[in-house]
Image (cartoon, rainbow, N blue to C red):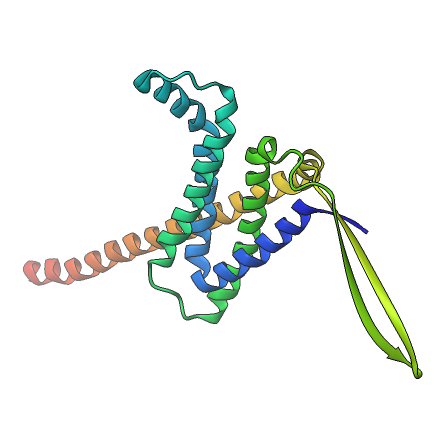
Length: 215
């Protein structure tokens, strides 16, 4: 069965970030997801600016061929920085929060894989090439020795992998925006409730004082 390397990498990243999300919890996992969005935007938009800045300041003659390398460096450092900063904060101990963080982390792993493949696919073209992995398993069945051979053909095709993975990109982004809007609306209603409660408390305290002065 032929398997694209990048599908396997996507699955591994989803599992990895699900574990990271389980450790971070719900709120910090959402922060990691948004931070990786910004890391992707920074890599996509600032690589050319950095190339032009280096050419101007250092009098270099860097061309478009270096832009994918700058994108790779910026995105990788952004992802590492976001995860590292969030791990430096305190962890949640609520299991429900950890499960929600794990689901958010799986979505984050999908985004990391898709964004990285989009930014790096020029560098990854033709790598790591065709390989074949053969696994031999010996077993005994009804007193007869047998041999089960499983062969997996791995291949590298960034364009084809990205074309498949990006099909779920827009729905995934819409899910993230919905989650962010719901969280933002929830925070707004909580803040509004506190303000309204403070006003009612102030009115309830002030009214008896006014009545006491009138008498």
